[in-house]
Length: 272
Image (cartoon, rainbow, N blue to C red; front, side, top):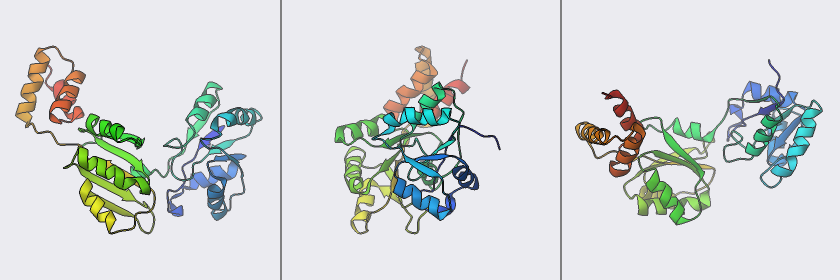
C-alpha cells in the first residue's frame, strides 16, 4: 500500500462496527493521531487495541498547531487526522491544516468511511441528486429563513443539535408550512430513527418522544407548479431574450419552484 504523509480518517458515527479495516491499519501505522477530544478518540483506540500517540487538534487550537504538524512531518513522522465521529472537515476542524500541508507539498489522502450526510440521504427517497448542505444552520431566524427561501427548489440538508431542533422546525413551519421534512437521529445506533412529514408533524412527534442524539435533517425541494409544456414555453421565451441556460434555470427556479438542474438540462436539449 502506498504511504502518505498525512491521512484523513473517518471514524464511526455511532456503531463501532462501521470502522474500515484500512482505517484501523492506518491508525496503527502512523506516528501521531490528531483528534478533537482525546477522551473520545481514546475509547475508539482502546476498543481496537491501537496504541498510537494522540495530539489534541480542535477549533480552539487549530491555528497554533499548524507549525507543530509541519515540524513533525518534516521529521518524517506520519500523521492521521480524525474527528470525534464521521469524516473530518465536515463541520469539523481540518480545512486550514490541509491547506497548509498542501502548500508545503506534503502528500495527503482521505480514506472512505462513515459520514452522517451520506448515511441519512441513503435512507430518504428523493427526486434528483442535487442538494444544498449547510452544515449547522445559522442561529438567527432571519438567516435560516433566507436559506429556506433561497434554496426552496433544492433539497436542504443540515446538522442540528437536540436543544435547537424544535426551534428550527418552528421556523421552517412558519416560512414553508407545507414543506416535506425528514429528521434522522442516532444514525447507526440502537435507537436510530427517521421521521418524515411536515415540520409541524415532526414537532408533534418529538413532543411525545425524548429528543436525544446527533441529528441530520432535510427540507425537501418544492415541486414546480409548471407542467412540462408550460416550462418549455417559458424556456423558449427566455432563450429568445438571449438569457443563458444558467440564467434561465435560476429565473424559473425562483419564480415557479422548477428544479434548476431539470431546467438547465431542458435548455441544453432544446438548443437550436
